[in-house]
Image (cartoon, rainbow, N blue to C red):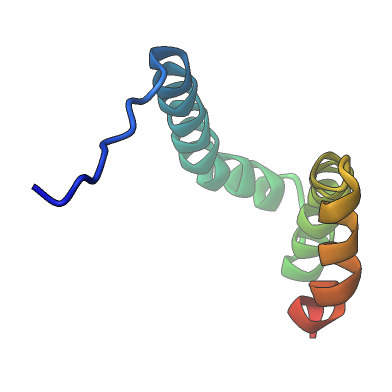
Length: 86
């Protein structure tokens, strides 16, 4: 053998991943229903897309703060953040 070891995965992490995947699937499948309701309420494409972008912005900001908790992560965000944005 080559001496490589196989890392064992924590069962809690596995369950958490499954729960996140199910929540993501549920939210993704509910999106067309919400869009149909928005069109039925009189929304146009520009207003609906603007609302969608504005409603997702707090989530992305929360993810940014979560990822920048540690000093080395903050330096990576400052170094590569603008490259990723453009």
